[in-house]
Length: 283
Ligand code: 9MG
Image (cartoon, rainbow, N blue to C red; front, side, top):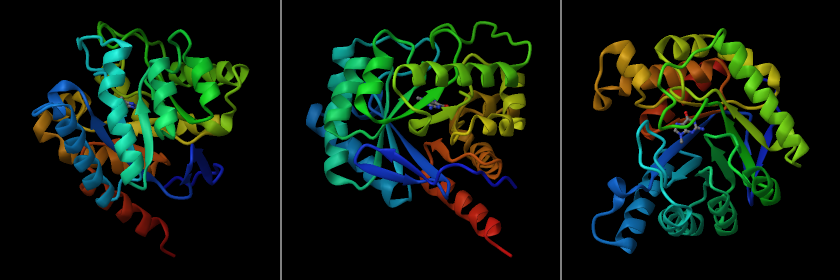
């Protein structure tokens, strides 16, 4: 089992994450197909109830996103994205003791989300949209930089790597350099290899097997594999049948030293992570 040597705290706005133990991040999608029945306030309240249930189940971060990153998803305007996430960020910050992670690449959403209480920016584009670096820098928040080639709409069209582990590592290292130049120090950064983003099954499996190769970048790792197609492809399972595969991968990620796992099924994942902690703290 892997014991990591990271700093023990990650400052996330007004809240702090204790990095001496692994964390479970609950996914809260606020796209129209998730909580839209019954109007704006009903949608906000339903999202808040779901967030509260995930926190009660042990999530210490909630990742709130208003733009789907699935292949082929319709792009949304900054205004639309903000209308979806802002009320939910505000309500979760007011009601729940949890770190709010904002799943966005959009500077206007980062700025307003930070004002409303978000503690982390989770950007699948690793701050490559115009203005994102400067906005994230000014926010003072923690930032999760994820690896992806291209855009979500087209990223799965024949992705190619000579050496996926090396290239993902180089990409993340390079983004850390760019971040440092923009005033985002390493202490604010979390790194994510981006499972399922511009990667086929062989890439995903190889990257997972060699996850430890990212540790010497010196930052906590976030792993998101919950219900993803790599599980479907490896096991021949539909989306609703991927819990066991997802739990196995979440447990393996934590055993390999990941600091945060991003999941839909919080209660089950928290049990798996706690079980690993129990073994790791034994004599
Ligand atoms: C938004 N989102 C979807 N999948 C993700 C993953 O694997 N990592 C991060 N950081 N964000 C993700």
